[in-house]
Image 1: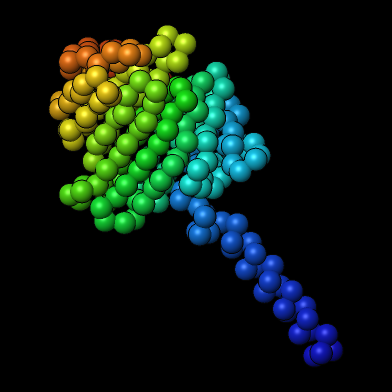
Image 2 (image 1 turned 60 degrees about the vertical axis):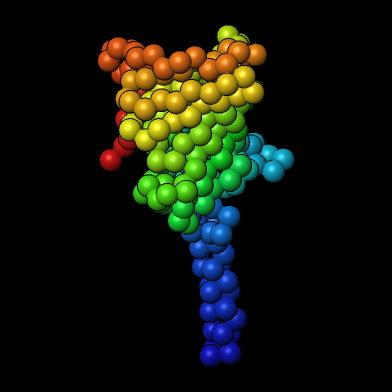
Length: 214
């Protein structure tokens, strides 16, 4: 009986260790999904996978939402990425637990809100969003991005207090105060900061927000 128990215990240990490797603490996971609306997906490797609360997020994942979808992702270190309808955002690089922090994203279109975590308060931290129109650069940031591919434009809105630089080959501008925005059309330099009204700002925030289940 004792001899038979050893193989059984060994199998149980192997199963438990495998299960742990699938969790959000696995080496490849940099965060997980907090909540979703609709049926967002992730393109990973050569496969499309459905996302739900607790799903892992990895480097090089492309998060994709349909016209009725939203998703909120919490990365390690506390950075929150909220992705609105009709979006595709790829995580190219992330080191949220390192000091200084670094996040690099590429956008193929859509609406996003990025709120960086504590490690991005350190000097030298950087957050970068690359699009065909311009690159958005910041350190510690809370910002909204609307990348309207069909309309041929990009809008960046400041929601926090950390400086946000928007630049392309034609020029650059900087957003310093909450409610300031810059718009960029293809082939043109970023517009100078313009303030938007509180109601318009609230509507922009709502475009990416989710009522998180408690």
